Length: 327
Length: 257
Ligand SMILES: Nc1ncnc2c1ncn2[C@@H]1O[C@H](COP(=O)(O)OP(=O)(O)OP(=O)(O)O)[C@@H](O)[C@H]1O
Ligand SMILES: [Mg+2]
Image 1 (tube, rainbow over the protein chains, first blue to last red):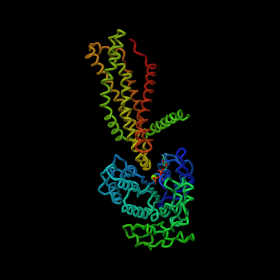
Image 2 (tube, rainbow over the protein chains, first blue to last red):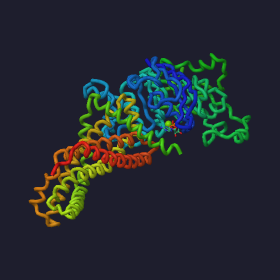
Image 3 (spheres, rainbow over the protein chains, first blue to last red):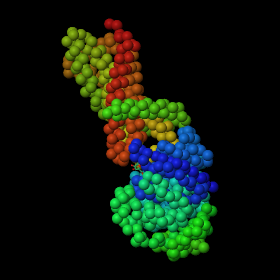
Image 4 (cartoon, rainbow over the protein chains, first blue to last red):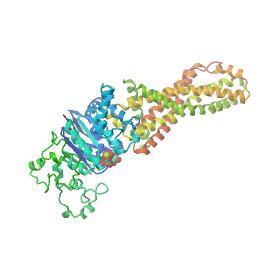
């Protein structure tokens, strides 16, 4: 069972440059959350803060009662054993083959025999589709392959909390669909707490239970998927629908004149909320909400066409029988 | 304006703190023996040939300088001794410092810097491994070991070079050269050379691992880290050399003639 991560009033600045201020959110145990945000808004910094690689200037991060922001180095190393992390560029050890990379955590932290290790490693390599590349060095493979190898390594100790920094950047659309399905399946099997940083709108709309948006040096909104997908808040709406009209410009944020010049009356209507991606066996995950549950509970009328199998133009149908398990 | 003063001071403070972390990590088990051997081999392999090539002209120049100086004073019989002293006390440790910092240290900084920007070090920490214990300690110890060996190598090659230069080219007599060896030089000279080499290896390794682990900002950042580590190491090594030489003269009485 996953572990809850509670973040309170987190603030981080590098020198005079404030990255974000007063970020508070709770990653509910066992759920999938997605963090969105324009490039350079500090999503990677946020992930690194969650695992104590970067110390925040203010605020707390509570995991199983321990505050990562202030705890001792020793406690930190203990707490990190709960985590699996996929770094943005894979972060494979350059001097080891992919096999040794994936086997590394097992060799360090378990007393398994080499043959047990080999079984586990090959299982994870199969999962991410890297069979046959075990003996390659990280320098000899493509960025997308490195990323998948990083995923295999992050999974190998069966962590309670998994952080994914852009699991889908640099992957082709088919593999992105595979990775999304893989993450949903993994969440169903392990019931770990997931936090995914992504730029892929389709992923953000269909995979998570919760969505957060980092923008303009603060956490603009964090909450259930349906809340953000039906939100009229300009930045959230613009980002989740990949539009040019809205407060987010090419260079971080638009200035007042530019914003005033925009005509908000002609905003296109909100697209329908797609169904969440189901695990490939068609059974919902333990933490997966009923489609439309949040909207119904909060008296929000979802955009027309929401929660239909074929309802969303955004959904790229994955290879497995998602539709079969939709109802 | 203040930054000009506080900048280097802050760096010096961080270097000391880092050195203390390394010292603590030396005693953490399990000791990374494989990494240590690999690194020692690697540092030796990038420094041995250049240092041998540097040592011969170094020995010859020292022999030439001391030789002519000693002759001006009319003390030809001490030519051998003077050359040996100069090589053991100063030339060998300095040549070692140059090579350990320039070749060994820069290689270490580049290696760790590349790992830093590829986020390998972060990944390691997340996997519960302390990079200081895993990567830095073996490098520091390897660097110290290799520095002592290099110092020995330079001493031998330098003294041989001096001998050949004096006897073959300057027409000195082999017997006199050899006989005067022990006239001024004493065993503590050898020890202080080794002690210097040990300290130089330590400083070079600490600075270059620190710079590598704190590289920032992509591939240029690694280049920057390597450059800074070499410059800072040189500065520190020449300073340490001066201090240790001065101490040596205070502590060990010169041999009576
Ligand atoms: N160690 C550091 N020192 C100083 N500044 C840093 C450091 N790490 C990150 N930054 C700065 O923090 C900001 C946010 O960086 P971050 O990598 O978190 O962005 P991001 O949201 O992950 O962007 P992307 O989507 O492009 O990956 C950037 O402006 C970056 O320059
Ligand atoms: Mg990032």
